[in-house]
Amino acid sequence: MAGGAKGGQGGRGNKAGSHRKGAAKGSGGQARRALRGKGPTPKAEDRTKHQKGRRKAYVAKKAAETAAKRDGSRSPAASGARGGARRRSGKESSEFVAGRNSVVEALRAEIPATALLVATRIDSDDRVREALKLANARGIPLLEAPRSEIDRLSGDAVHQGLALQVPPYEYAHLDDLVEEAFASGEAPLLVALDGVTDPRNLGAVVRSAGAFGAHGVVVPERRSAGMTASAWKTSAGAAARVPVARVTNLTRALTGLKDDGFSVVGLAADGEAEIGDLDLLADPVVLVVGSEGKGLSRLVGETCDVTARIAIASSVESLNASVAAGIVLHEAARVRS
Image 1: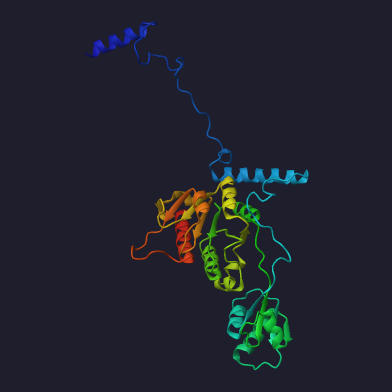
Image 2 (image 1 turned 90 degrees about the horizontal axis):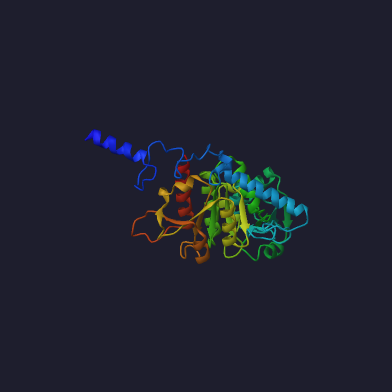
């Protein structure tokens, strides 16, 4: 049997004109279907899906945009293709925190302030004395004013003779936020909020972002909470470390981030996978969290690469937006570690 098989193989090898299928002996380097090597493995920065490759592509893109601006042309990013909103001076007015308890809590939280307004002939108590002491320690100017003037400035709020003037929050630009995230040497991690209108939720998300190593938070200009004094206070100081970018169009901003190599993961109750099972959390990623009632808007949901869910008891319909954001940020930190 073994001899017959050997002889048959020899016969096939000697018949040049044979039409029988199968590889001929010794044809590895000559046949049309010969195996060809793929060559050496490309460097990390030359691979488009590698973190270093994405970083290289982003830097090249920014260099091209800078050169275009220098030549007097307007690049897509400059014309708002990403949906970013530049910092604007004079567009937003100062905010006033009114009431003795609120003023003391704001000063304890070291919210940035430009002046402490004190009503003329105010009845002093422990809260007033503490407010004055904290303001003096931080070098915040004390301005004595009539109660009618404090009424006007605070929008007729119940101020009890004390009001703290808070300057407008300086939002980061999304391009700057992304560049700094890549420059950190880590895979960028961002959180975007869609339809979250409670500033305390925004502040809590900023706090969680700081706790779990996120590089920034993105919010839209319309139908969204801004970084008010309430948001700053809820962040427990994290607002001083975690930048918040405000964009004119969240869908367009997410599309621009995808062009820069980010994956966009939307949080939804009927998500395609559980958040902890997503390996892409280790790569550049944007976690999008919607409001507790409505969830993600249609256009934002369609922009996401994947939707993910949090495993919760069936008796609970949904989670608060800031709680959900804290859970998914924890999962992202766990995957990355």
